[in-house]
Image (cartoon, rainbow, N blue to C red; front, side, top):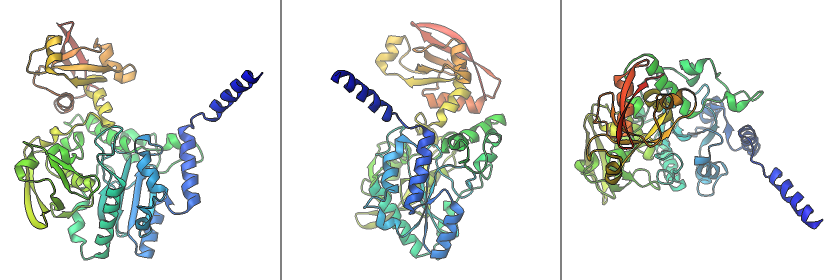
Amino acid sequence: MLRLSLIALLLTSSVLAAPKTREEKVREDKQKVEAEGFWIYNDLQKGFAEAKRTGKPLLVVLRCVPCEECVKLDDDLVDKDPVIRPLLDKFVCVRVVGTNGLDLSLFQYDTDQSFAVFMLNADRTIYGRFGTRSHRTEWFGDVSLKGLAQALQGALKIHADSPNNKDALAGKIGPAPEFPSPEKYPVLKEKYGPELNYSGNVVQSCIHCHQIGDAQREYYRALKQPMPEKVLFPYPHPKSVGLILDPDQKATVKEVTPDSPASAAGFRAGDVIQRLAGQPLLSIADVQWVLQQVDPQGGSINADVLREGQPATVALKLEAGWRRAGDISWRASSWGLRRMATGGIVLESMTADERSEAGASGEGMALRVKHVGQFGAHAAAKQAGVQKGDVVIEFDGRADLLTEADVLRHAVTARVVGDRVPVTVLRDSKKVKLTLPMQQ
């Protein structure tokens, strides 16, 4: 009898501990934050009005709910961590959980993130951004609460000098986007409205951050034009140019990668980058913002640094194609690119030993098929005969595409929807000829 009771108790506990649905998490998040009353919940207009009334700067946190990858940082922030709370009290704080109706002429950021922070004036002058990501699940190398505190303190200092510094901050807003708000993009227009639908299924009504980037890419793909490199390789991480920055500081160089543009420019570990392209920096995200504005064909940007207490100027020169050094494989948007370019397969580079074992030459293209999509348009490669473990040695007559990013870039810049591309793979050390469709 005791044993049966224990079993019943265990079964009951497992039911009670059943994971909550995404819909439940979103609604509970709203209820919790609104009950606490510290944050303005999903109402930017109210936030701007309150900032104007009080004279405080505005802090806007964009976060898809619930995102497990960034939940720790955001929960610490929303729960008013004692390190951050005294600083938050000096801002009008707004929490935005969906991008429906978001003004994309003002809120421009790396949409492959699911946590982004803006610090700005009620007159829409942006002081800076916070929130960087270079891995699908790990964020600790890019952001921290200490780094956020540094950014908030820097924003308060800039705000104290407002509006005298407005001209110096003008570069923190970029050119107008293709469409003014996410739901205006053609691929989203028929599915979403300008607001979340709390009277129905709120999760299904929400436009997530990554969907903006997806919609932008599909827009260019539908035009049958080469996809711009700014869209294909968005918001370059500082490490793509050789700058490893300290996530606990605003923009302090922790390390410089040898034989990189940053190394050639003369950056040194310990340099405190105070301004880049004339813009004051509050975080790594601000460095990304400046890099995003640099022409893909190259250019030069000046950095004002503090080196061992003394001011110095460093000129960072970037050559044509510099964006391609960045890793895009972790990005959610890469799944859409893989559908368009390779029919839903994931490619990975190989070591010299792996190449030899597969029968591939020591040089040239050799990308192993790590994953083959199984459903819908992502199954196009499977239907074309591609198998997991195949080694791609030629794509569209090219044997010099050495990374997955090279393949994706070639396909969406040199080919259009409807084209069919010849592909050669090694399977059991034998060459197999296949054809992949280029898709929307």
